[in-house]
Amino acid sequence: MGYKVVVAGATGNVGREMLNILAERQFPVDEIAALASRRSLGTEVSFGDKTLKTQDLDTFDFSGWDIALFAVGSGPTKEYAPKAAAAGCVVIDNSSLYRYDPDVPLVVPECNPEAVEGYAKKNIIANPNCSTAQMVVALKPLHDRAKIKRVVVSTYQSVSGSGKEAIDELWDQTKAIYNPTDDREPKVYTKQIAFNVIPHIDVFMEDGSTKEEWKMVVETKKIIDPAIKVSATCVRVPVFVGHSESINIEFEDHLDEEEARDILREAPGIMVIDKREDGGYVTPIECVGDYATFISRIRQDSTIDNGLNLWCVSDNLRKGAALNAVQIAETLGKRVLKKG
Image (cartoon, rainbow, N blue to C red; front, top):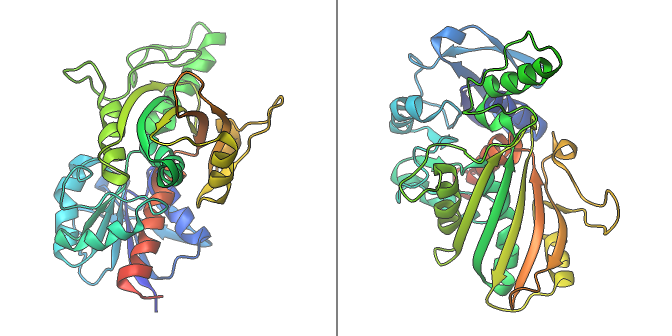
C-alpha cells in the first residue's frame, strides 16, 4: 500500500523536479495530483512515463491525501498549507514561511531525520534554504566527530534559485552582450548578472546582512546545533544551475584533513572528489542532475588551531529543494506513517 501524494506548484522548476524525483526514486505512490494556480490550470507535467494535467490549487480538497509537497512560495503557502494540514495531509513545505517556527521541524534527512517526528504539532515539515541544505550535509558528520565552533561561508549561487525568470534574464543578457541591439537591462536582479557577480541575495537587514545570509545562520543552528556560530556572504553568480560554497570551519577539537576526508567519504549524501591536480575537484556544471553533495579541496587551515577549508557543490533544484523534500517524505514514511 502506497501514499496519495500532492505536488503543489507542479509547473515551476522545483515542482517539476519533485515529480521527476518521486518517479526516479520509486516513491510508493498510489495516486498523485499536480496542482497549480489558475493561470497554469490544465498545463501538462510529467510523472515518470505518465502525463498529468494540473488541477486548481484554490479549489483542491486535501481530505484523504497523505502528503503534500509544496513549492508555491510563502504567500500561497500561508493560505493553502494550513488547509491541507487541517484536512490531515502532512505538508512538506519548500518556502521559508515555516522554517523558523518552533513548532515546525526543519529537516535535512542526512542530519536530523528524527526531527520529522515533531510534525504532528502543525502537520507541517519545513524544507531548508537551498544554500543551507548542502552545507549542513557536509557539516554534520564533521560536527559529530570534532564539534564545530564557527563556520565562515561564501556562496556562489546559481540563478535558478531565483526561478525561471532569472534563468531567462541570464540567457537574454548573455546573448545581448554579443548583440548590442538587444535589451540587457536587469529586471529580476539589481544589476546585470551576465558576466558579473552580485553580492546580494534577498532583502537587506538592519545589520547589513541579507536575509539569505541570515537564513544560513539560523537554519544551521536549528538543524545541527544552536551553539554553532555562522558568518555567511551570499553571492549570485552567472551559472544556470548548481550552488557552490567555500566553507571555513573551526572545531573545538583537532581534526586532521585525512580523517575529515575519510569521514566525509562515509557520510550519507556526500561524494568526495578531492585530487590535488588540475581538474581534481567538482564544479557546479558537473553536479547538475545528481543527488549527491560534492566535496572537494579539503585542507587544513593553518591560521587557526583547529581549522579546515572545503569546497561544496550541489544541484540546488535537487538537494537544495526537490530532492530534500522527497527525502523528508521518505523519512516520514519510514519513521511515522509506515505505508508502502
